[in-house]
Length: 265
Image (cartoon, rainbow, N blue to C red; front, side):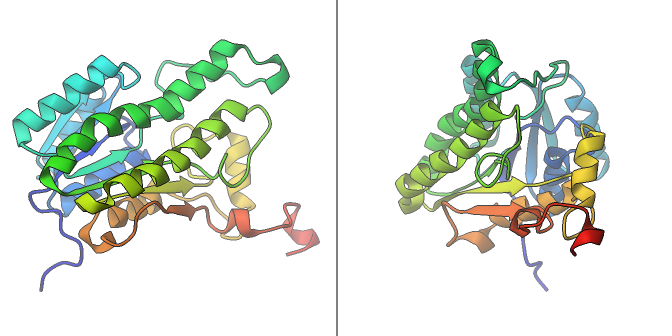
């Protein structure tokens, strides 16, 4: 019996896959286990450790170090993939939010340095723009493509203090994706956004862990649970879904009451 989702011979680029317990790496592993040829990126050489892990599982993998905020590096990366593999079928835009070696600056908007705004927009919006812009011509040429962008519930659905720039960037990803979706649907290219809520990763703070415990599900989500959504949207089974946003948050944003559960739920 043929498996439900099959990425055999599909060339899949997954950005932001350096963390061994992150969404990007788990997405790459699942795509590879379903037959995909995987290219993964990160900003540091730890990506070669992830490459080795996937190869040990029998997955055809190439790891690449690239700063995707640098458009020249993005162009070089995408051209390399196209030259080596002849096509790019799937793009998972996972890079953003945090970067190894870069400390987050949290401040209220009225006191926020413009440099912080520019950095957050560059990392959380422009990376997605840069990679998508370089990959799309190859997808259009082949009349096929699947793009999945990692947004967040923070920005499009809800927000937090000291996260104005991050919220703006993640909301902008959705607007950008909808416009592109209209432009490229005639080329059999689908582009969708996934909005994770509280997800347990190596960057999870105690405050974020507590937020996960207060969801209707009573826990934070796992990177694998987000990866499952990414992979479905990247598959041929999602061929009539485009320009959409999918929340993966254990029901957190649908609950009106946010206080202690024992007082209400």
